[in-house]
Image 1: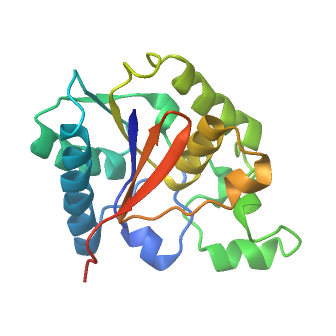
Image 2: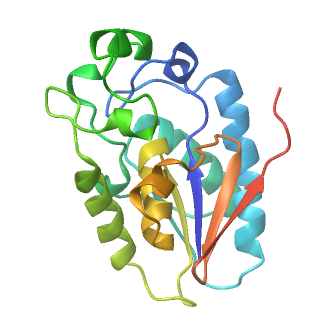
Length: 196
């Protein structure tokens, strides 16, 4: 089983800035989301006995969220570079509206992230990281991992797990107030209590 979380809301999420590999702190709301997701992840993990691992992207926003999970579960936080968010090259730090204005032909759906100028990663780059990470996990039913990651990487990780095509992978939601359980080839979403 994999319990998958996206980090809580950041200031750049609110401002609609491209984050990618750059850092932005969790907002007060994002801190509350992290605590709520941590409680839910701990509850889900507690239903399945065994030795659990807690693995996070090394980025600050993901680590802050993973620290909340660690406080609930007592697990040590491991980091794995493969869980880091997509690199958006020269777009990082810019407002999404400005990116769209300068590149109006790029679709503004899940495809907008890939192949950014200045070294941005492609779909294949990020999918390669996601599938590599999944391939190294123990097989089910021995698998017991809580993972904290990001919007794009989380989409691709779920898509790789479920064998979804590219469009279905990119059309998935990326909430910051829900937890996903990946088990026996199925993906279930568990929503947290609403956060003000």
